[in-house]
Image 1 (cartoon, one colour):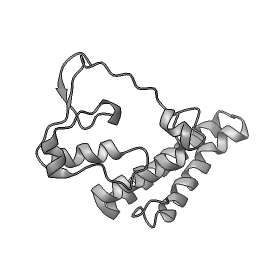
Image 2: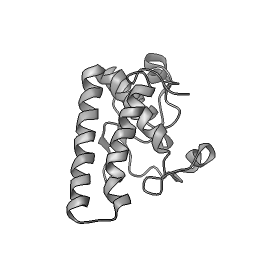
Image 3: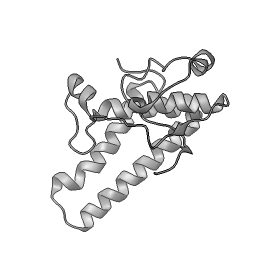
Image 4: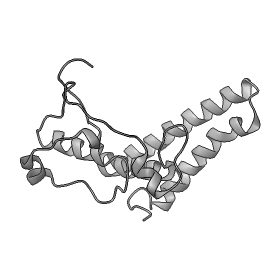
Length: 155
């Protein structure tokens, strides 16, 4: 984007936060070890009446995956630790959208993974590729229960 604009959230490496915002909405929620802490904080700031603004001329260098590499193996696709990303995503949806919101999120993700499974099956892809999305869907549900219905981190 080439223009200054309001947005829903900015990456944490990009965020400059006014002290007044922190005084009003607090710091990042410590339940998020990695991922979604900035989404959650921007959501809280917007609910409190603050704007979240993207400035295209502010130079930022973000080397994706560096924090994650110190913790565990990162995925080759997203350069993230998948279990922590899923955990944080579930915590975010439960905290901000309730049990119905996180359940809707789970159902939509499961549907998407099933559609991708069918697509790979129809295209006669390798078995590892075909079953990847089904395994991912099962893992997401496992994380839902490991986080006590998306209420507590696993750490």
